[in-house]
Image 1: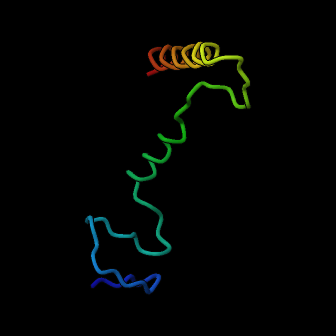
Image 2 (image 1 turned 90 degrees about the horizontal axis):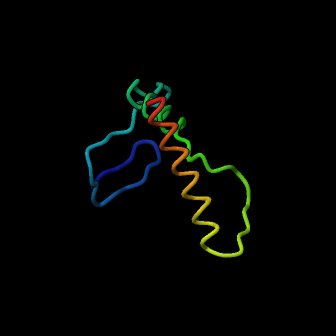
Length: 77
């Protein structure tokens, strides 16, 4: 059995090898870089609620947004 020092919970089994960082310390640079990369991810779909008459119109918009994103990524890496 394994006990979590932070919460006091007791676990019968722990899967994986990651450990929680010490309290009060910032995350390591690799974690901060990964978070920043995820924050920069853009779908290119505009925000809002869209109402379509049929699936074909929705698919056309989604395809256009996807192609725009692919072109943007190809140009700027």
